[in-house]
Image (cartoon, rainbow, N blue to C red):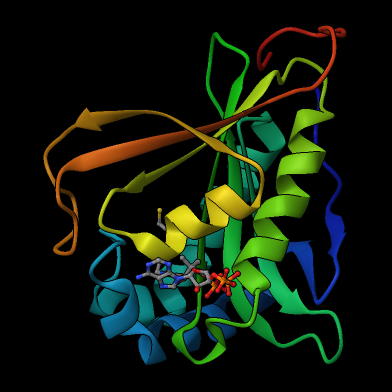
Length: 191
Ligand SMILES: CC(C)(COP(=O)(O)OP(=O)(O)OC[C@H]1O[C@@H](n2cnc3c(N)ncnc32)[C@H](O)[C@@H]1OP(=O)(O)O)[C@@H](O)C(=O)NCCC(=O)NCCS
C-alpha cells in the first residue's frame, strides 16, 4: 500500500502527519479563524473549535492513514514550528485520482503557505504508485483556493453544479486537475 511520508518539506512550511498533541493548536486556530473559514468549510462550527472534537478528528485521521485512504497533515512553519493550518490527501477507491484539501488560519493567510503546502503535497502524491492525477475541488466563488490550484500547476477541467455546502459557496464546483507527467508506472488504486 502506497503511503506518503509523514513529513514533507515545503519551503516556508513543513507538512507533518497530524498527531493528538496538535489538537489544542488546531482548535485554537479554528476558533480564531471561524469567520474566515465558515464561508467555505462546512465543518467550521463551534464544536470544531474545541480541543475534544479535534482529538476525535485526529483519531479518525489516524484510522484513515493506517488504512491508506486519507493522509492529514498539520501545516507548521519551517522555522519555529507554529501550526498554521492543515492539508490532506484522499485517495478514491477504485480509481487513480487523489484529492487535496486545505485551510490556513486567518492570521497566517496571504503568506504563500497554502500554495507551498499544496504544491509540495501534489508533487508527493503524483509520485505515489497508482496515483495518476490529483484534484482540487473548490467553489467558483473561492478565489484564494482557485489561486492555489492555478499556482500549483493545476488546470481547470470542468465546473459541476451541486448544492452549496457552506454559506459562501455558489454551487458551482470547480474541478482542478493535475496529471502525472510521463507514462504510467506501477500500482493500482488504494488496496
Ligand atoms: C484558500 C487558503 C488555504 C489560501 O491560503 P493562503 O496561505 O492564504 O494562500 P497563499 O498565500 O499561498 O495564496 C493565496 C493566493 O490567493 C490570492 N487570493 C486571495 N484572495 C483571492 C480572491 N478573493 N480572488 C482571487 N485570488 C485571491 C492571493 O492573491 C494569493 O495569490 P498571489 O500570491 O498570487 O497574490 C485560505 O484562504 C483558506 O484557508 N481559506 C478558507 C478555507 C478554504 O477556502 N479552503 C479551501 C477550500 S476548497
